[in-house]
Length: 467
Image (cartoon, rainbow, N blue to C red; front, side, top):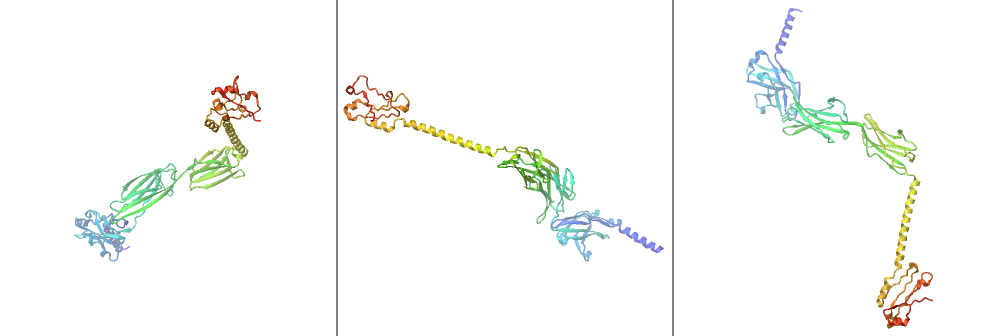
């Protein structure tokens, strides 16, 4: 290498060192929501000999990449916002080499690459072309990020949690320079009790949700919503996660048996993952056979219902419903109904029929006895006729059995003397063979018939027997 070549290389390196004294620090890429603002963190360095020009009278300029970039000026800190392509302000102090800038009310047309330029009243007028910032303006907000934590440990690519676990969900999103700042809210389907808290970490908004997993809600969808309050309208974005709670089998209390000609027992079980179900007779597993028939019905993604039909010869054994999945086992004894043979049922029906017939016979007998007693009394019609004839009517009852009674109508003697033809003769009916002691009517011991007519207060009676 000759001397000339060495001199050229030295000058090239020296130029690089001198140029390195002027540089700028910008983010490579920034995203912004249409209608919101964007913050560009900016800091620059210049040659030391130019520091003297950094006074309070310093102008910051932003230019957008395009043909004739030097003419494509979009923002000037000295110009009115109405005369610029984009509204904004430089919040940093340029004299302190801080060029942080805020652009407002961005639109999709504002997307592109931007370069910064500084201008002073002195010799310092420099465009930092070696580095630019790319601004991407989108109309709809980005979805927030949702992360799952189980027992304070992050779980990735998994949506299953075990019953009883302490579960946390974290939702995060960029603030995107909106004013007022955005909000994060949680919701669940179906609704379950949970707690939530929010915080701001740098430019990231974070909200944590906490709850305890339970089998009562085996499948829950949680939705995180971020809301940006813009000048013209609010814009929202959502992200959700569905959690599946896993738990050991649980047998329903409604499991029972019914009996007709055969015994049919049912068992319902719920578990996640979906459990298997077996029937045990006297402690041994049972399958389909001539004496047993087993069927299953899927009630839901976690529920199962099984039935078993038992022949009568098996109803004297113990029946057990057994279910299991990867998280545990559950079992329950099923009470079998008592066994009655068909002969026993027929005999029972016959006994009931005999009892009913006997009751009817007793009631009829009581009714007949009452009716016969009523017929043994003097009818009211006969009494009324005796009163209308002006006679004093009395009844003479025998002292023997009522079936051998003799009934005699007795008339006043005074009535007979007035009109002998008015004497009332009453027939005497003998229901059994006539005996003298049973038909005696004593009128007087010593008096004759004529003597009886003297005293009208006396009574007489004539007894005639039909020929």
